[in-house]
Amino acid sequence: MRMLLLIVYCVLTIPTYPQKQNYSAKVMLGMETYAFLKGQGAALKKVASQFPALKDDAIAIEKSSTVIFGRAEINIKRFLKDELGDAEFNRIEHRIDSLLSEQLKQPIQKKEYAQNFIEKVKSELQLSKTGGIQKGIISFAYHDAPHQEVTDGHIIHFTTKGHPKAEESAVALSIPRSWSAEEAEMPATVQQFTSHDGKGIEKILIMVHDLDEENQDIVLNEKSVAEMIPPQSHVIRTEAVVIDNLPAMMIEVEEVLNISHNKKKIRMLQFMFTHEQKLYCLQGSVGPADVNQNLDRHIKKYEPLFRLIAASTQIID
Image (cartoon, rainbow, N blue to C red):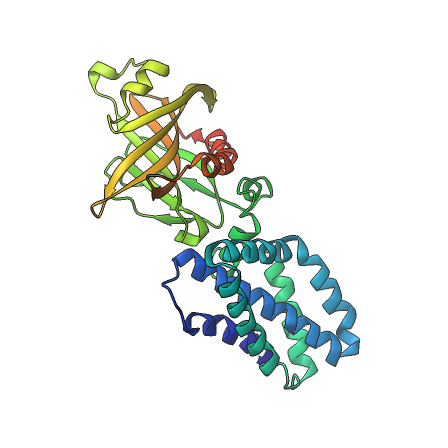
């Protein structure tokens, strides 16, 4: 379909734009998603102008798409300007606009192609797919308020049941749809998830520890959870919470790490509870970042999301 090929063409062309720097994976995701959204919008306008009978449908879809697609486009623009600066962003946007202008000079060959394209966009608006460009759209649509991805129902239901790292223990919880599951290296980490389709610096970890005989009756409180924290970590605050009707503790920690001989730090919220001789820990983190960077605003932005995930957690018998 000519118009769909146009959009794919724009997406694939962005990475080949002459670069003065190495873009991060998240910036690349932002550029590709931005190009897709602009291409889709331009294509809808082309359909409306070339086929008057389809104008109302094209306009209706464009209006309904502003809730998610429009929000994503606005957030991506803001994000790319912050990351790249106005001048670099303007060069990239000019490149996208030039490609679209060149391709849209040619008419759509058949009305059937335009009708099929409209149906394709309607399908994309359902955001029912678990991969591809939709993850980029969802992740940036909620870039300004990550917890709303969960409250708006864009979630996947994950369970550790049957996982080789979670023998004789299982929990179920809700994870944002735009986050990608990844295998974790640490033995106690059952599963980890990374934001922005695996390209962000925010993570959710699910950890399960077997309690030895000495600690099977451990009571989680401010003192006991603080004693579990490595010496290179700094405890910021603790709070008593409830997870699946079980007493639990939340602890906020900042830890300094040596990564490739460079000191970096991460900020994390850990939600801990015990059940049948096991210690469960749900960890949401931001970073790594430069040791001099203040992560207060970053962790506050993601705290509502991390709390929602902890609140959704249930023990599976």
